[in-house]
Length: 288
Image 1 (cartoon, rainbow, N blue to C red):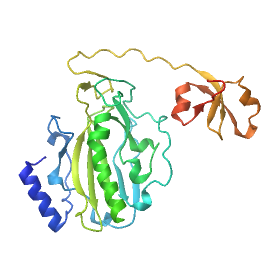
Image 2: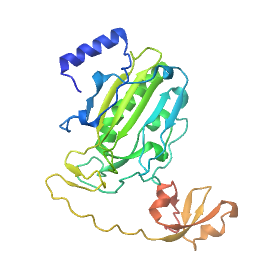
Image 3: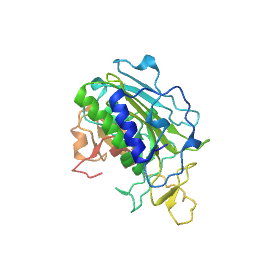
Image 4: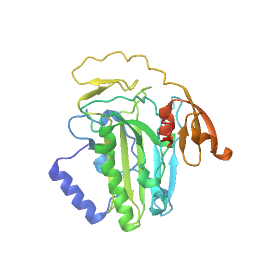
């Protein structure tokens, strides 16, 4: 758990001198984690991760758990190096809907939207984007305040040194709940024996000012009584003509359709927003 400032500083000083050894094999129990108070994460096992000795190599790898019987993610594990980082622009992920996903806005949330599609292993580390085995329903607070600082720490270290970092993120679900209560994040820099990067933390999947039903993903403002979710409206189903080369979509009677090469033409019937989530943009002529 999180240590008092003086003890934490002493531990950090010792680790800088001696390196960070991985902890002995030790299972993680959610019952050990205190209820969320004001900090986005707590330290586990004196900040010592638990990685097997045979993985402490300079050979990069990535491993993502198959979805379980409820379609929930399991641990995502990688040995991050320069060779695993992205080399091209990130694409759309809107087509992936993790368990518990709901589109809901609150004025008290940065950017309004309560939920983000949270990468277990950040895109900047392994270039995994629309991978359903690497995306969970996470609050904006978890994504930006809880996880991003640790992801940035790993990315900055790898880019500055060219070294490797063992990195594992485990979503923590209770029972059959659809939304994870939090994530365990572990990291250990290989070449310098943990002197550069070493942590084992639990980041809370919470949003200050909002209450969450983790069984369903439903939510309400703190202090308000939970309400039954209204029946979800079925998005309008419309037929569009896609230009798969220009990534534009058109109404069927648009003049641009007649001049479109047949090899680039595709028909689509469904919600307009799904096309936008897949990276398509509306034609400026027919304004679909």
